[in-house]
Length: 352
Ligand SMILES: Nc1ncnc2c1ncn2[C@@H]1O[C@H](COP(=O)(O)OP(=O)(O)OP(=O)(O)O)[C@@H](O)[C@H]1O
Ligand SMILES: [Mg+2]
Image (cartoon, rainbow, N blue to C red):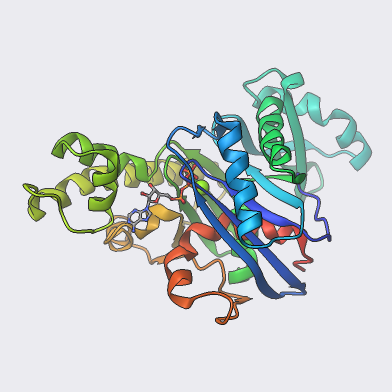
């Protein structure tokens, strides 16, 4: 899953509410945005990262390529959710050949699925006299097959399958050039999943996908105020309220859900604190992306909860965008949603 392929590729992020596509060009950190596409999906087209409606998803992918005249057919896509297991494991010192031979055997105890049903990958992150530290990623084969099928049905070539949390990390490394020792939590709040990746410098120390997302705000608004999904979405985004609904009713509902998010983040930070050796490196900063990050007041809420700086993640911080080709106002609005697609697109260019 981790090989860097220096061939033109489009990052296609298939989310549960929409598909995002990004194409970049350039090298050595001098990147330029070539194409950017966004196509909404019908609810339930994608459930827990599983593509349920293959035809509508592949049509949406094909539409993006047609509409934005994207010629590149190679695609980098990502997996997330319960079928993906990412873990830092410590193994006894051995040669790289021995590691390759025995990795599946070592990994087995960390994977709650049959080992023959998963695709395995690993990356050595540290080496000492008697141990090697390995970051392991496993994903159910049927999930990868499902993703590849949607891409192929759209007439494109699934060239790279990454893990969403790593794509997010790649995007962060390019844009923020973190120093070793800087502990930052990346939070990508989607419609149904929140990817959390805690990094020390460029090393992922803990990652987890929480079953939390913007949909939870929408469904509580629907339930409490008797609204349709569309109405609740509008209310959540701060649009004019439907007749009979009062402004003061909204904030407490939103806050109930933000409390759930804060609990998820706290839980992840606690897991992380329990796994670090010296226990001293607390998370210094939160960088938040995903459509869910656009909820009014959320950044302030999280900053107050955790008493650390919380910022909106900018996936294009170090990427040039020509304002003649991309409307700055549209870009400002859509940027938070693009973090994973940018991270995936980076797999197709030489990011070092
Ligand atoms: N202005 C806004 N205010 C609040 N929420 C918003 C706003 N704009 C978008 N959202 C929410 O962001 C979510 C979509 O975000 P995103 O596109 O990152 O999700 P996704 O990638 O489709 O989903 P997932 O990754 O969870 O499968 C939706 O719940 C949507 O309602
Ligand atoms: Mg998403």
